[in-house]
Structures are given as structure tokens and as C-alpha cells.
Amino acid sequence: MPGAFGSYRDGWELFDRARSDTKNIFVVEGTSHYDLYDQPKCTAQALERLESFFAENL
Image (cartoon, rainbow, N blue to C red):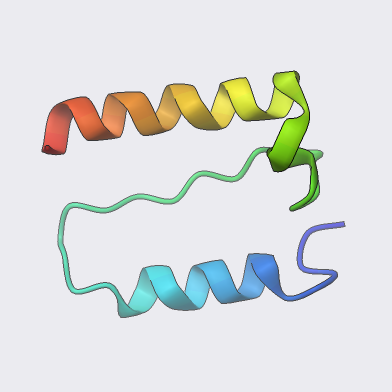
């Protein structure tokens, strides 16, 4: 359940506070914070999104 430990809510707060206009947030539906540590199905989605963001903005 997203936000069970505050990660989801805290993520949105940090996103809103970031001063950059070049930002986005990505929610891996159906996962928990801990799934993003070592579950290949979850991490692959997140990494794909990070790679494209970094390629465009770094």
C-alpha cells in the first residue's frame, strides 16, 4: 500500500519543494518502497525511467 510508511507522501513533498522546472515523479504501481530494492520487475521500471531522465538532463 503506497504511503504506508510515509515514503509516498514524503516523495511528493520533496518533489513539490524541488526548485527545478525539469523534474518528474514516477510511481511504480502495485509495489511497495521495499520492492524497489531487489525485485527485478519493479527495479527495471524505475531504472528505465531514470536512465531516460538522466540521458535528457545530464
